[in-house]
Length: 413
Ligand SMILES: Cc1cc2nc3c(=O)[nH]c(=O)nc-3n(C[C@H](O)[C@H](O)[C@H](O)COP(=O)(O)OP(=O)(O)OC[C@H]3O[C@@H](n4cnc5c(N)ncnc54)[C@H](O)[C@@H]3O)c2cc1C
Image 1 (cartoon, rainbow, N blue to C red):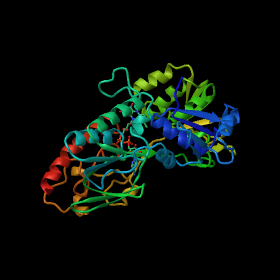
Image 2: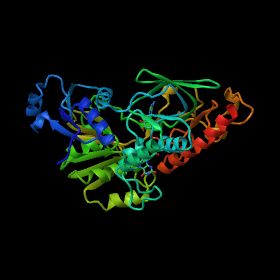
Image 3: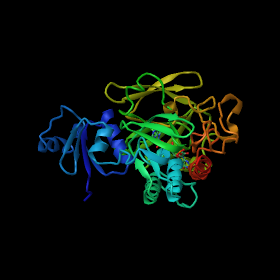
Image 4: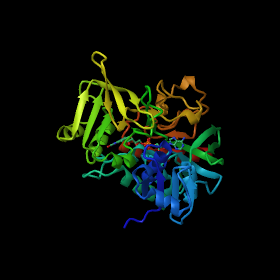
């Protein structure tokens, strides 16, 4: 019998319940979901703990303690997750624990640097949400993003990196010698060097109902915790890139049917051929070109989507419970408050790409290959201008950034 660390009681379509499930799922913490609308033993579970449906979702922990309508941070705190830094000073802080950040952590900690990693959601980043990564070297049969993330996290911890999550880096102040970071638990840490590996976050769909129904039928990324609820249902996917293709293949394992709406004439320009071949040969998946989803309809949860034919503009409302959106991503840099030079899309310039005449570069030497426009601040992975936006690229850059951190620390000693 599965030993659950956590039980969550709530409404299937409630966004706050979705956030808790997503957090636990992404951090690979086994939990039982009890949907009050389906019975599922939810009422008796509440009654046993002297609770009512007044403040859902309710979380019941392994030791019997309960939380009513908690935030993700409350839940993490109650579960004793490592959210507060042990020290106020480190050689290097790595912001973001996707492939780039975790690779940097493994190299930094294994090479003797005191290392802290700050992660907002779950180690693994975008890669952690992938159902199967098939092109990462060394895994000829593919590997799930969750397995890869767990192994990488274990490796970083083994070498002594301190990994804080879920904790946001909320603000940074970089000066010539020290870098100061303000974290969402209210503390500040000071470091000598920083590796910024905050990657990108999902671009959202705009249109009536989209934000209101986000988490209540409209989901970004694979949202694997919700995929099980989509069993035997018709699932709709928007997007034409590799992540959309992987998502559609994953949902087709559960769903009765998966329909993908894509803007272009075909997937050829936007998706790897191996994924196109797998979609083509899956009888449960249909790909409909030249369509966009322009509205999400429903009061408490998604009931229909409005689909526009991009040739002519005619629209049609289609009954739908689940819409999964994969329409690209935007760089995560707001917290840096404009301190680093970026390109017109917000990706951070490093090395030779930095428009040096436009920034106040204080050193005689040129910026190192992965160094941003402030000495001692390095950027690795998807956030970097010119990154190849692949797991292997992030891992390579994260590892390389630590070599450059050593050079920077040597010159400032
Ligand atoms: C569904 C999907 C499938 C994919 N499949 C493949 C594949 O098969 N092969 C492949 O090579 N690539 C694949 N990719 C792309 C690959 O996952 C990315 O290139 C890679 O994850 C980028 O790594 P990264 O470390 O730069 O950034 P990310 O993975 O984006 O990680 C950044 C991390 O930083 C955290 N963060 C952001 N802001 C803050 C902050 N202020 N404070 C603290 N933490 C913060 C985020 O929570 C996140 O965990 C896929 C991507 C997706 C979404």
